[in-house]
Amino acid sequence: IIYVGGDLNLSGNITGYVAFIVKGNVNISGNVNITSLDPTGNNLGLYTKGNVNISGNVNVKAQILATQNVNLNGNVKVYGSVTTKGVVNFNGNIGIYYRPATEELTAPFWVGETTGNELLRPTIISYYE
Image (cartoon, rainbow, N blue to C red; front, side, top):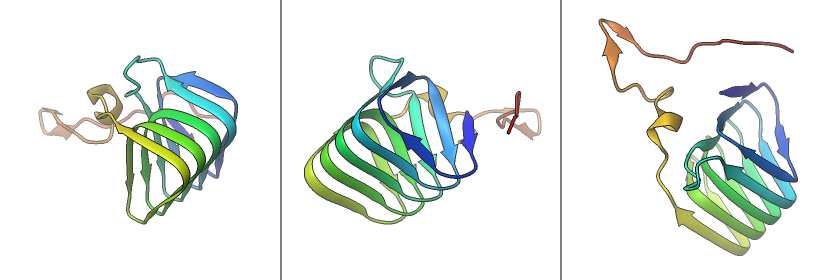
């Protein structure tokens, strides 16, 4: 889990197994490929309190969750899911191919099991500014 206290700006090719928790906006632009390490593309999450703005020639294999709006502009393909409390704006050649999130991605946020009376929660193992 990576916490970003402001905006997260992504460009280029990104591969990983991670959940980004973003306080600001998630901005993805240019010729971008975002791919999870899981071939099904279900273990990379982009979760924000702000907007998700995606523009350009972008392929995103991730789960997207925004408190505000999701703006998809250009030639955008999302392999995963898009969830928002606001609106989703489609402008251009947009494709969304649903894939459910894996338990490994959601378990730290949506508690399933308990150990005694204690709920399982994420643990901070490293912090730096």
